[in-house]
Length: 583
Image 1 (tube, rainbow, N blue to C red):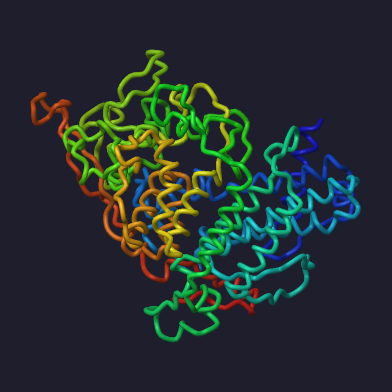
Image 2 (image 1 turned 45 degrees about the horizontal axis):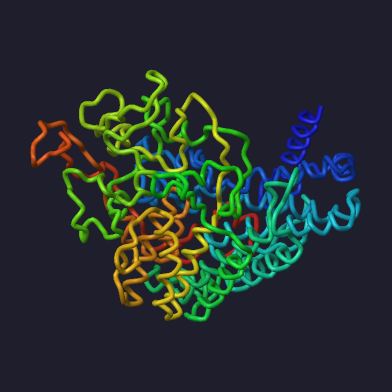
């Protein structure tokens, strides 16, 4: 009966909030509202409906099993059909009339913002104790800020509707707020939520947002606000006539201010002060095991903000090769393989340990926990043991090949977040979808320290990450990092470390955009690995020859693509909207 009630309420919530424009109000029947909000179980189920979509960007099935990851230089998408949405993103073929991208980046967040406003408006009639109401208000404010955060990093300044619930027959004319005002609003909401949220949620409330989650999202919105895309970006080369002061104001801060990075540092340190830690499992003899196992635990002190999931094999089904009953989606590129250092912490171009014809030996342990490469071992139900994954040219099923149709083959498969004892059709693991974890906060701290000129202090957070990863400390206890890096060198180093540590966690697309480096990284062809079987010799000690080749897929990124446009249809409905620069 409880399941039926929850399903019914989810349907009510979806019907009540479905709209032709992002603020329309449809079918908010008074009886339904009374049924939902005057009953404690129903009211919590309504809020649960909002929680169900907090991971919409992280969802691997977003954009027809593409997600933003597969629009980057880290991943090859298995389907080359140009109508597929990941290709629309990386080919920059979307337009201001593209509803498929717009619906998942604009409509969904505003639907949930409206649900949360409705939830907050009904708080007086909900049958909860005042202490519970206080916590639920804080949860709703934090979740609302989260959806605004996703809007801001995608579009720049957006309409801030506050607590308003608009009647369905009202003509909506809510303008875009400036980026600055939007950031101030979101930060204020997160501060208010953090003040009333617990440090941990226990029992039936586990999975609800906490003080740490609110403060972590605050650190992230401030990180974007301080980054080159928004901090002093005046869009110098956008077409004439589109670069008005109003458009610049919605697209970021016209002036650069280094003190915005100090706010980032302060926000990161507020999260650190709550007592989160990296998951380190020294009892396991495998270096870096804590990095791997952290993704397979329902609770540990590294998780900050996550989508609470039942036991599942979501990612095994999505990522594993076909011989392991997976859909082989999002295959890693040689681009990302090459950024992983060796076990001495040095890059493959600097370390004496690297051999291009034995390229996977002596790598940073995070590499082996992130990438399935030729001859890597993975569990097989046919043998009930681990056997080699064959990605070499000509290998049946999983072998490398290129085809102008639907290949997507890269010579690799993704291992990040997967349970090495599962296949795509057998077993489950206790795993949540992690949206923000403590490792990212350390990376945010390092980046902020460097940007305010404290480059020497930026080493500390990176040492913590590399120590947990299983990289050798070296005689200088610097884990392979060059001593005395300049600010510019450290900036590139931190950017690379983010790419390694947070690979395949829905960060790359947004990181490269906020650094305003997408025109460098997202133009051209991805690099792939083509292994070939050969006779074992001193030149080819593994019996395989490893050749790097170009993808068949051309990535295109233009300056205007840093932010998505307002949809023309939406602007016709809400005539107060102005267009994003360049569109």
